[in-house]
Length: 152
Image 1 (cartoon, rainbow, N blue to C red):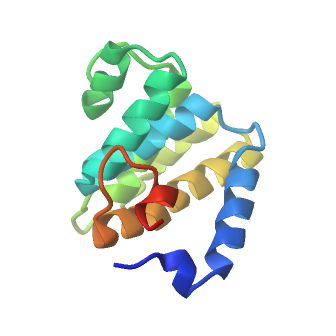
Image 2 (image 1 turned 120 degrees about the vertical axis):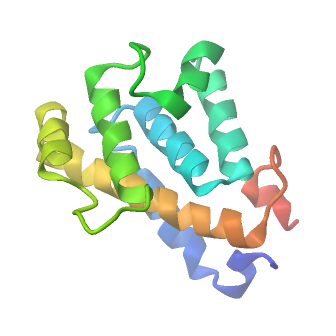
């Protein structure tokens, strides 16, 4: 796949505006990276997994905590708000049966930790992860190389 920004240059402005909006402080930056890492793991994207593992490591997160994202529910590596965000991410990204993808229980737990702005931001973070994952899965960028450098 060629550079999507060359084909649809408006994506750069839209993507930049979305990233700016997500940085509004309602969701901690580490939580945003944890959500993106878990979404990448579920989707099977090596690019996203490497990208967000690197981002978490660069922000000072331990290797043990980063490795624990794959099994976040098992243990005490994460705060309650991080666990709620990871549960919401998993509910959205994991294939589901006939039941609701985001159960009332998962939602109720999340709203214990995030106010209305936080829930809207967290929902947008999960949506942004899906947006980015489409390019990562279709375009097959090289892991470890920033997306902006893939098509230069």
